[in-house]
Every structure is written in C-alpha cells, then in structure tokens.
Image (cartoon, rainbow, N blue to C red):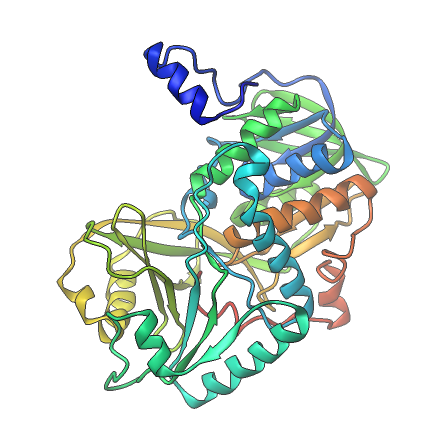
Length: 415
C-alpha cells in the first residue's frame, strides 16, 4: 500500500488526485480464519493491528455489523488521559497515551493527536483530597500529573469563572501530556494498516450466532454465512451482553447511553480540556472551533444512539455556571453512544467460559482514550491464550473474588 507523504500529495495534485488507492480493502469473507474479531471499532481494529505487528498473526477477519468506526469510536468526545488512581488502570491507560503520541508515525496516518493537556477541576474539599491522592499515586506510577491551585487554573483557562456561586474552583488535577485525537482517523488509520497486512475487514456483516464444540469456539454464523475460526475476540462495546448471550455466558455489566453535543464554531477561546465532576460536565474546543460538551451516562439501561432534551438541560446548565459564555452559544448537533458499564467502572479484558473465546468490554465512558492500550493487551491475550501484564488484573473472575479495580471517582464523569 502506498505511503502517505507530502511528496505524495504534491504528486497527486498534478494528477488531479486520480491516483489515490482505497484506504482498505472490502473483501468477501473466507471460510476460515485463525482469529475473528467481532467489532470494527477502535478496540477491535487495534487488537487486530497488534496481533499482526506484535505476533505476526495476519489471517484475521474483523467483522462489523454496520460500518467501520460507526459505533462508539465515531460517537465520543476524543479525550485522552491516564490520570487514574489504581495501579492496573494507570498502567493500561498510560500505555495507551504513550502509543497515541507516536500513532500517526506508526500507522502512516495522521490521527491528529493534540497533547493540549487535561484539567480535572476540584470544586469541593473532598475533591481536593481525592485529586491530591491521585497525584501522589500517579507520581509512584510514573504518570506525570500535578495538583494546581485556582490561580493556575485561571491562567490555563481564562474563560472560566473560578468564583462560582455554588461550586467555586478550588484547584485541579492537571495532566499536561493528556489531550485529544481525531476519533474517525484512529479507526481509519488502524483499518488501513490491518488491510495492508492482509487482514479482511468485513462490513455490513452481523454475527447471528456463535458456534462451539467440546467447550471451545469453532466459528460464527453471520448474515454473510458461517465463518470458522480457531480463536474469537468479542470487542463490541455496548452490545457485549448480546454477543455473550450467543456464546452462552453472562457478563457483569449493563448498557446505557452516553450523550454529547457540540456548539456552533467560534473563535479559539480554550486550548485545553476541562472536566468538572461536581457539576458533571466537561468541555474542549475542536480544531474547527466547536465547543465539544459532554456529561454523564443516562440513568437507565437503554440502547439508543439519540440525544435527549434532558441531557442538554442538565449538562449545559452545569457548565453555564463554570463557563458563563456557554449560555450565549447555539447547539450545532447532538448524539449518543452505547457504553457498557461494570460495577467497579473498570473494563473486562480476559478469557470467557467458552474456550478460545476472549473479550474486551466494559470500558464505560473511557473507551476512546484506551484504544491502543486495550488493543495491545487484547492482542497479547488472544495470541498467547493467557493475559499479559497489562490485562492480568482485568479478568471477569475479579467479580467473583471481590477483587475490584474501583475507578468510580476517576470515571465519575463521562470522558
């Protein structure tokens, strides 16, 4: 596959851009693969990519019932950070953040990673203590964060109102090397690299059943016919429970909608990401000038991908107090994604009761930031049949053993 470069752009300009190839192939499925990954979102494509790059496994199919990146990967707010409290979480998310830094070069595809910094506001005394604790834990974990005072917050975010009537800004947890990336570009970059390695990306192909024999997976039934495989990876975010039921087991998680919205484009006014757990909202400004706004998950289980007035009212009301300028903006568009949430707000990466069937699920509100790390860990799990260092603590057995990885504070606001 042709490499992208400034010289390629210049060359194609003289040809009226008639020489560009398709970024990835769209083949018909073969009868059998070494590995089938169900779900062509960020985590599914990253898993396939690292199977090929790290382990040389390229006889792989990535099956998607819709279109590539059309699920949560294309419906999130692109925030990347690793300032988590628990050691297993910090290791996994910091691996992902570090991979994001070189992803454009690794994939030869511009994912528009922008290390603009992420600030989590402390607006109560308990939040101050919690974020100071996290900053100390991050220092021991090798994750660069710091707790800053309100004056520094105002310096970083001139448009913020630090003297709010209900919740004044008392400080914040600042991760300078956090930031954002282009969600679509991440999926497209991984897809292009997977296709270049000979993997098959099969879109508009829904899995309707999981076949097994002798306690091990043998293949899947799809709307394009049966496909055999030696190993199966389930990486379908909010639809994980449905696939697990097909495979004959239940998951300790529930599916809810997560909503976000963007404003009309305005001139640059905020060059970092700001999250506010107390008022439950967060905001950043896109490269196009839109204010990207999000809040918490819906309070009831559902599979909708639409927005609602309730979300606009609650989230924008909260942010108007901290950012008064928001009240004068018009909403441009709104959307929702389906997230799968576990009891401890940490993901599941591990083996399942069905032999040679593995799962990557339960990311809740933090799936995008973890894409490269989650893919790296899941690829190692599938290739070796046993979890590696990154995923060792994230198996489903932790819910039986009471060995939770509690990130309810770090994941308390959608991000």
